[in-house]
Length: 236
Image 1 (cartoon, rainbow, N blue to C red):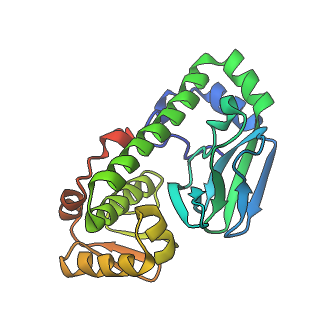
Image 2: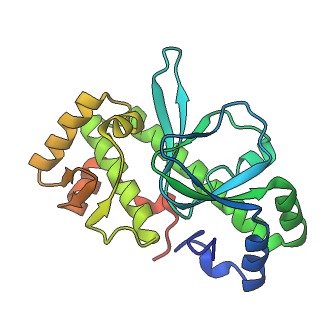
Image 3: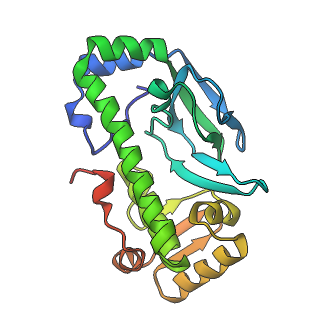
């Protein structure tokens, strides 16, 4: 099943079997996307929405000097550009971080789902509202927290998202992002990111070894990052 992880531990229990079958039938294509590949450019017309099955995708914006700021990191189970359905184009770029497996749903098929399946339409709307909640939290993180707290908050969020799709046990998970990627997500340079990771390790909160992340003290990490998972709407 393509949408097995969609809205995991959120509103998954509210998706009726016939709605899931209709959503599965709406997929036009499933394909693999190489790592570091731009999928959608800012301002380009979009006619499909992308569901991430495997890998990591990001949304980002560049400044005048070409410096990139990540505005979202997506994990399997995310409908990464569902907001493009009513907007018709994106105000940012979207690219793969790792090799990804994606499913695409034409907007013409979403038209039919919205018209004929109101409960499923609410769930798709709910998915975009979670995205909006995460954007608000990223604004808070970048605007109000210091560097160490930003990094702590980011790792708390990504761990929580990976845990609901079975890719973290709460203490250990795989995160194939470079320090450059992490810096772009947290608004700091790669050198500063390296320094902050050492700070978190020395405080006994988090240890990153290659692509392996070890959460040493989850409560302490959340306290430092002022992380409250309520905005993720994870049930239980």
